[in-house]
Image (cartoon, rainbow, N blue to C red; front, side, top):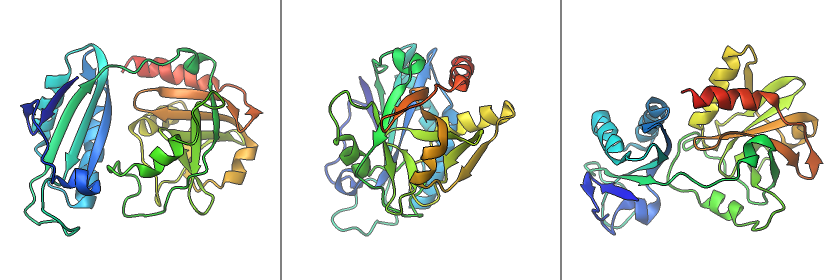
Length: 268
């Protein structure tokens, strides 16, 4: 693993950094394919929107691009970009002149079973709920404790991913992926105006599906609506798209569009 902390290789983060103290920051997980970061423009757009909403000073985009490029030394891998508010002493109140800290690291490509793409995955419900907070909805902030607790709910082979709801029983996402449901012949994806992360691969799937004359409807998705779903798909920056073969014990047909989408993705 190669790590740059504020541009210095092997540098250390100050223990008083607000990212450590309070989760005061943002992150992006970026797939590297063919030696290039995939959908980098979209990742940086989301980072910029998150920085605007949190009031973080965004480093120069050219600097971020250069540091991301410098750690991309393998044809395939993962780059994680973390941006924090930097150091600011004790207390929640942020300093107006706080200088942001940035961490850019390169990781090996995750080892996953190829059958997840061809045979589909098993999806079940998580007990942990996502809290509604429109101020944080959509952005990829550093506080992921809800997802951590949800992922700790299972450690066996009964399911591959867990689906999370908010406290009003609205479906939001899986612990690490966005959701698309085929309902009444149309794609539906949960609205993320109250909580959840608006994934880059979610954006890609919606764009591709629209180009295929199969547009995606974004709306509130009550958990009860999934009883009518004939197919489910999970997306994130690293997996692309996974079809779901079983949800909460119910067998589902694999969505043929997933194979076509992943083939398109491989050409990007």
